[in-house]
Length: 286
Image (cartoon, rainbow, N blue to C red; front, top):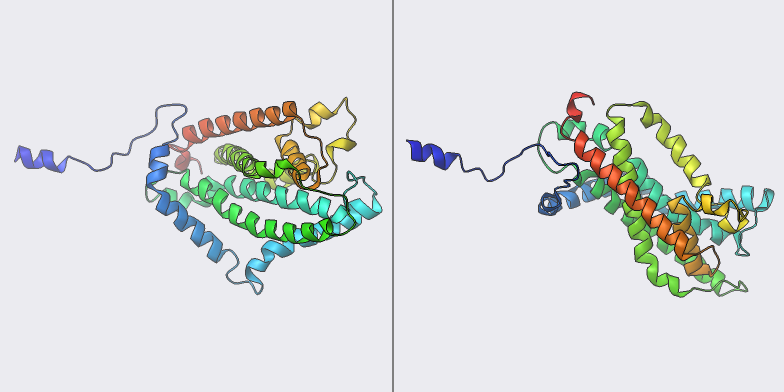
């Protein structure tokens, strides 16, 4: 009888709360990779399922935004844009910012949005924000093709823009945006379980962050004495590097790049620590 009881006690999976400050369960995250891709497939298929234009919205949104920005900031405000045609300059900023903002907005609502499923079944909670980063990578891919289409047009005309060797660093720029948006998103998500006001603040805050991220105003337009402060924003360096890669124009410096990565890693660390502490008790407050 005792032997039978002991056999029944040999569990295949033991779920217990994390006791460490920085325990991300990365091994569990890999084991649940099929679930991550199920989330990706679900979101990609259902997001525009009942719309008439479907995935075309991935193209229409940045295109219309760029047209409006070109008219307002390029033509009416006359903001200098490093000598690059205004439309392609702003399209590069919008496509790059769109990936980061999409990841940040969606991951910042992880706990509240998935409270129902989190409360019923166990799986590593990080699977939800990680799937968001992957689905937005697919959106970025579609919008990047749109950018390349216009880029080829401008590069074959009289424009002086030319690609540089920084094009090879594009995967690292994507990696940094993914890490930064994941870190900031889970940081806000953890705080949102207790302070719901952040849900309303996020849309406004992301909009302000965009205006401070070189999407519209290039770093070269900032006075030199204020530029180091401007470059503390990690997204500024990412967007400037992206433009330097394809246009050969932009403020690119090793110090600014290292500072950008340092800020990114600090945000990721803080986000992981807070997410790890909140995930075991958020159902009591959400």
